[in-house]
Image 1 (cartoon, helix red, strand yellow):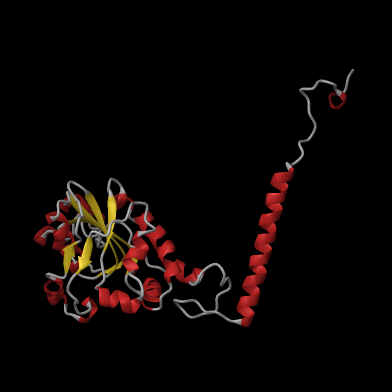
Image 2 (cartoon, rainbow, N blue to C red):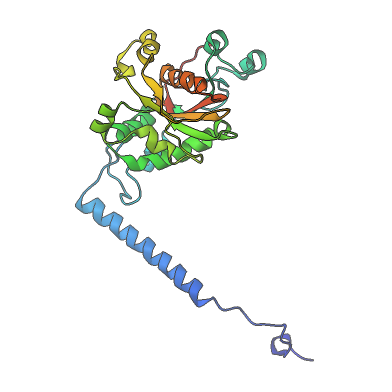
Length: 274
Protein backbone atom coordinates (compact mmCIF):
# COMPACT_ATOMS: atom_id res chain seq x y z
CA UNK A 1 0.00 0.00 0.00
CA UNK A 2 1.36 3.34 -1.03
CA UNK A 3 2.10 5.79 1.78
CA UNK A 4 0.48 9.21 1.34
CA UNK A 5 3.74 10.98 2.00
CA UNK A 6 5.36 9.07 -0.89
CA UNK A 7 2.56 9.60 -3.33
CA UNK A 8 3.50 10.85 -6.75
CA UNK A 9 0.13 12.55 -7.15
CA UNK A 10 0.97 16.16 -8.09
CA UNK A 11 -2.13 17.35 -6.20
CA UNK A 12 -0.50 16.30 -2.93
CA UNK A 13 2.10 18.80 -1.84
CA UNK A 14 4.42 19.12 1.13
CA UNK A 15 4.57 21.98 3.60
CA UNK A 16 4.50 25.34 1.83
CA UNK A 17 7.60 27.48 2.05
CA UNK A 18 7.25 31.16 2.98
CA UNK A 19 7.57 33.51 0.06
CA UNK A 20 10.98 35.26 0.18
CA UNK A 21 9.27 38.63 -0.19
CA UNK A 22 6.97 37.93 2.77
CA UNK A 23 9.91 36.84 4.93
CA UNK A 24 11.81 39.97 3.96
CA UNK A 25 8.87 42.24 4.86
CA UNK A 26 8.36 40.51 8.21
CA UNK A 27 12.06 40.79 8.97
CA UNK A 28 11.93 44.49 8.07
CA UNK A 29 9.04 45.05 10.48
CA UNK A 30 10.93 43.29 13.25
CA UNK A 31 14.01 45.42 12.64
CA UNK A 32 11.88 48.56 12.62
CA UNK A 33 10.20 47.62 15.91
CA UNK A 34 13.57 46.88 17.53
CA UNK A 35 15.01 50.15 16.24
CA UNK A 36 12.06 52.12 17.59
CA UNK A 37 12.37 50.43 20.98
CA UNK A 38 16.08 51.26 21.09
CA UNK A 39 15.34 54.85 20.02
CA UNK A 40 12.65 55.18 22.70
CA UNK A 41 15.07 53.96 25.36
CA UNK A 42 17.88 56.22 24.19
CA UNK A 43 15.69 59.32 23.99
CA UNK A 44 14.10 58.56 27.36
CA UNK A 45 17.56 58.30 28.96
CA UNK A 46 19.31 61.16 27.20
CA UNK A 47 16.54 63.74 26.85
CA UNK A 48 13.96 62.59 29.41
CA UNK A 49 10.98 64.00 27.43
CA UNK A 50 7.80 64.38 29.45
CA UNK A 51 4.12 63.88 28.67
CA UNK A 52 2.63 67.09 27.29
CA UNK A 53 -0.43 66.65 29.52
CA UNK A 54 0.83 65.34 32.89
CA UNK A 55 4.58 66.11 32.65
CA UNK A 56 5.61 62.59 33.65
CA UNK A 57 8.38 60.87 31.70
CA UNK A 58 7.34 59.28 28.43
CA UNK A 59 8.19 55.62 27.96
CA UNK A 60 7.71 55.77 24.17
CA UNK A 61 8.63 59.33 23.16
CA UNK A 62 8.97 58.52 19.44
CA UNK A 63 5.34 57.43 19.25
CA UNK A 64 3.36 60.10 21.10
CA UNK A 65 3.67 63.33 23.06
CA UNK A 66 0.96 62.26 25.52
CA UNK A 67 1.26 59.15 27.66
CA UNK A 68 -1.19 56.28 27.52
CA UNK A 69 -2.37 56.94 31.08
CA UNK A 70 -3.54 60.44 30.12
CA UNK A 71 -5.46 59.18 27.10
CA UNK A 72 -7.12 56.52 29.25
CA UNK A 73 -7.98 59.08 31.94
CA UNK A 74 -10.25 61.12 29.64
CA UNK A 75 -13.77 61.32 31.05
CA UNK A 76 -16.01 60.45 28.08
CA UNK A 77 -19.52 61.78 27.64
CA UNK A 78 -21.62 58.63 27.56
CA UNK A 79 -25.33 58.10 26.88
CA UNK A 80 -27.84 59.25 27.78
CA UNK A 81 -27.07 62.66 26.29
CA UNK A 82 -29.18 65.52 24.97
CA UNK A 83 -29.79 64.78 21.30
CA UNK A 84 -29.31 68.46 20.45
CA UNK A 85 -26.39 69.87 22.46
CA UNK A 86 -24.75 66.61 23.61
CA UNK A 87 -24.90 67.48 27.31
CA UNK A 88 -25.25 64.46 29.62
CA UNK A 89 -28.76 63.69 30.85
CA UNK A 90 -29.39 62.33 34.32
CA UNK A 91 -31.35 59.28 33.24
CA UNK A 92 -32.83 57.39 30.31
CA UNK A 93 -36.25 58.42 31.64
CA UNK A 94 -35.66 61.92 30.30
CA UNK A 95 -35.13 60.56 26.82
CA UNK A 96 -38.40 58.60 26.92
CA UNK A 97 -40.46 61.52 28.22
CA UNK A 98 -38.79 64.57 26.70
CA UNK A 99 -37.67 63.36 23.28
CA UNK A 100 -34.02 63.22 24.24
CA UNK A 101 -33.38 66.92 24.88
CA UNK A 102 -32.14 68.78 27.93
CA UNK A 103 -34.14 71.55 29.59
CA UNK A 104 -32.23 74.39 27.93
CA UNK A 105 -32.68 72.98 24.43
CA UNK A 106 -36.38 72.31 25.05
CA UNK A 107 -37.01 75.86 26.23
CA UNK A 108 -34.66 78.02 24.17
CA UNK A 109 -34.00 76.01 21.03
CA UNK A 110 -30.78 75.92 19.03
CA UNK A 111 -29.66 76.56 15.47
CA UNK A 112 -27.27 73.62 15.87
CA UNK A 113 -29.46 70.55 15.51
CA UNK A 114 -26.95 68.07 16.95
CA UNK A 115 -23.63 68.48 18.77
CA UNK A 116 -21.21 65.95 20.19
CA UNK A 117 -17.88 66.05 22.06
CA UNK A 118 -15.28 63.49 23.10
CA UNK A 119 -15.59 64.31 26.78
CA UNK A 120 -15.93 66.83 29.56
CA UNK A 121 -13.57 69.80 29.57
CA UNK A 122 -11.77 68.76 32.71
CA UNK A 123 -8.89 66.66 33.97
CA UNK A 124 -6.85 64.84 31.36
CA UNK A 125 -8.78 66.06 28.32
CA UNK A 126 -8.43 69.68 29.41
CA UNK A 127 -4.65 69.19 29.78
CA UNK A 128 -4.43 67.57 26.34
CA UNK A 129 -6.41 70.41 24.74
CA UNK A 130 -4.14 72.98 26.42
CA UNK A 131 -1.02 71.16 25.21
CA UNK A 132 -2.42 71.14 21.67
CA UNK A 133 -3.76 74.68 21.66
CA UNK A 134 -1.30 76.68 23.73
CA UNK A 135 1.91 74.62 23.60
CA UNK A 136 1.75 73.97 19.87
CA UNK A 137 1.66 70.16 20.11
CA UNK A 138 0.00 69.89 16.71
CA UNK A 139 0.60 66.15 16.39
CA UNK A 140 -2.32 65.77 18.82
CA UNK A 141 -4.75 66.88 16.12
CA UNK A 142 -4.94 63.48 14.45
CA UNK A 143 -5.66 61.30 17.52
CA UNK A 144 -8.19 63.88 18.76
CA UNK A 145 -9.88 63.93 15.35
CA UNK A 146 -9.98 60.12 15.28
CA UNK A 147 -11.67 60.05 18.69
CA UNK A 148 -14.07 62.80 17.62
CA UNK A 149 -15.03 60.95 14.45
CA UNK A 150 -15.80 57.87 16.53
CA UNK A 151 -17.95 59.52 19.21
CA UNK A 152 -19.57 61.87 16.67
CA UNK A 153 -20.37 59.36 13.95
CA UNK A 154 -24.06 60.31 14.06
CA UNK A 155 -23.10 63.95 13.42
CA UNK A 156 -20.83 63.09 10.50
CA UNK A 157 -23.27 60.63 8.92
CA UNK A 158 -25.09 62.33 6.04
CA UNK A 159 -23.13 65.60 6.32
CA UNK A 160 -21.34 67.04 3.29
CA UNK A 161 -18.42 68.96 4.73
CA UNK A 162 -16.89 70.36 7.89
CA UNK A 163 -16.33 74.05 8.65
CA UNK A 164 -13.70 74.95 11.29
CA UNK A 165 -14.39 77.91 13.56
CA UNK A 166 -11.99 80.63 12.37
CA UNK A 167 -9.53 82.62 14.47
CA UNK A 168 -9.02 86.33 14.00
CA UNK A 169 -5.98 86.81 11.77
CA UNK A 170 -4.02 88.52 14.57
CA UNK A 171 -4.58 85.59 16.96
CA UNK A 172 -3.76 83.02 14.30
CA UNK A 173 -0.59 84.91 13.44
CA UNK A 174 0.45 84.93 17.09
CA UNK A 175 -0.39 81.25 17.66
CA UNK A 176 0.90 80.09 14.31
CA UNK A 177 -2.07 77.83 13.52
CA UNK A 178 -5.80 77.39 14.00
CA UNK A 179 -6.50 74.37 16.18
CA UNK A 180 -9.99 73.91 14.69
CA UNK A 181 -8.51 73.69 11.18
CA UNK A 182 -5.93 71.13 12.31
CA UNK A 183 -8.68 68.93 13.74
CA UNK A 184 -11.10 69.42 10.85
CA UNK A 185 -8.61 68.37 8.19
CA UNK A 186 -8.28 64.94 9.85
CA UNK A 187 -12.03 64.26 9.94
CA UNK A 188 -13.56 61.98 7.27
CA UNK A 189 -15.32 64.82 5.41
CA UNK A 190 -14.05 67.55 3.06
CA UNK A 191 -13.09 70.76 4.86
CA UNK A 192 -14.43 74.10 3.63
CA UNK A 193 -13.23 77.42 5.05
CA UNK A 194 -16.69 78.93 4.81
CA UNK A 195 -16.28 81.43 7.66
CA UNK A 196 -13.86 84.15 8.63
CA UNK A 197 -13.56 86.12 11.87
CA UNK A 198 -13.91 89.80 11.07
CA UNK A 199 -13.95 91.18 14.59
CA UNK A 200 -11.40 90.49 17.29
CA UNK A 201 -13.25 89.43 20.43
CA UNK A 202 -12.21 88.88 24.05
CA UNK A 203 -11.71 85.25 25.00
CA UNK A 204 -15.00 83.56 25.86
CA UNK A 205 -13.40 81.99 28.94
CA UNK A 206 -12.88 85.47 30.41
CA UNK A 207 -16.55 86.43 30.17
CA UNK A 208 -19.63 85.56 32.25
CA UNK A 209 -21.97 83.14 30.51
CA UNK A 210 -24.60 85.85 30.02
CA UNK A 211 -22.20 87.97 27.94
CA UNK A 212 -20.82 85.29 25.64
CA UNK A 213 -23.58 85.40 23.04
CA UNK A 214 -23.30 89.20 22.81
CA UNK A 215 -19.52 88.85 22.50
CA UNK A 216 -19.95 86.73 19.36
CA UNK A 217 -22.42 89.06 17.65
CA UNK A 218 -20.93 90.27 14.38
CA UNK A 219 -17.68 88.38 14.96
CA UNK A 220 -17.94 86.21 11.82
CA UNK A 221 -18.84 86.53 8.17
CA UNK A 222 -19.14 84.14 5.25
CA UNK A 223 -16.06 83.93 3.07
CA UNK A 224 -16.47 85.27 -0.45
CA UNK A 225 -17.65 82.69 -2.93
CA UNK A 226 -18.91 80.20 -0.32
CA UNK A 227 -21.83 78.14 -1.64
CA UNK A 228 -23.93 76.33 0.94
CA UNK A 229 -27.22 75.82 -0.86
CA UNK A 230 -28.99 72.86 0.75
CA UNK A 231 -25.84 71.52 2.44
CA UNK A 232 -25.62 69.71 5.78
CA UNK A 233 -22.64 71.33 7.51
CA UNK A 234 -20.62 70.33 10.59
CA UNK A 235 -18.95 73.15 12.53
CA UNK A 236 -15.72 72.06 14.26
CA UNK A 237 -14.05 73.64 17.30
CA UNK A 238 -11.85 72.60 20.21
CA UNK A 239 -14.09 73.49 23.19
CA UNK A 240 -17.74 74.41 23.69
CA UNK A 241 -18.72 76.21 26.89
CA UNK A 242 -22.13 77.83 26.48
CA UNK A 243 -22.35 77.09 22.75
CA UNK A 244 -22.35 80.80 21.86
CA UNK A 245 -19.59 80.49 19.26
CA UNK A 246 -21.26 77.51 17.59
CA UNK A 247 -24.61 79.33 17.53
CA UNK A 248 -23.06 82.41 15.92
CA UNK A 249 -21.44 80.27 13.23
CA UNK A 250 -24.62 78.27 12.65
CA UNK A 251 -26.69 81.46 12.22
CA UNK A 252 -24.44 82.67 9.41
CA UNK A 253 -24.23 79.28 7.71
CA UNK A 254 -28.01 78.96 7.69
CA UNK A 255 -28.37 82.46 6.27
CA UNK A 256 -25.85 81.46 3.64
CA UNK A 257 -28.07 78.62 2.48
CA UNK A 258 -27.12 75.61 4.58
CA UNK A 259 -30.01 73.23 5.16
CA UNK A 260 -28.76 71.99 8.53
CA UNK A 261 -25.89 72.77 10.90
CA UNK A 262 -24.34 70.27 13.31
CA UNK A 263 -21.28 70.59 15.52
CA UNK A 264 -18.30 68.61 16.80
CA UNK A 265 -16.02 69.83 19.56
CA UNK A 266 -13.16 68.01 21.24
CA UNK A 267 -14.48 68.93 24.70
CA UNK A 268 -17.45 70.65 26.27
CA UNK A 269 -18.23 72.15 29.63
CA UNK A 270 -21.01 69.92 30.93
CA UNK A 271 -23.83 70.56 33.35
CA UNK A 272 -26.59 68.49 34.92
CA UNK A 273 -29.48 70.75 34.00
CA UNK A 274 -32.80 69.16 33.01
